[in-house]
Image (tube, rainbow, N blue to C red):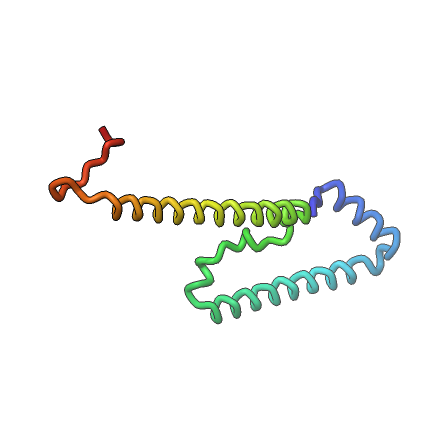
Length: 123
């Protein structure tokens, strides 16, 4: 969240003025309990997920699933590029299959001389 010492100090001063010195320790204790409970719940959920997934849990790249890395513009750009990539791949597959058919037809049309194939382009 980008909290540094100065920001925390400003928050504490504002809390001191709003809550007063009498109630501030009580609210700080409640906030500490809330943070501990949230951490305990997160650890429990992580342990449960680890138990249910088994050894696959360690194989997952969790950084890839971090929602902070997603940028809607990049997602749209990647989707558009992916469609273009798929079109290029389909065209490439068509060219490869056409070339394979031409080679097969040429090989069937020319009988080997003496049973040995000779590639004129290789020399």
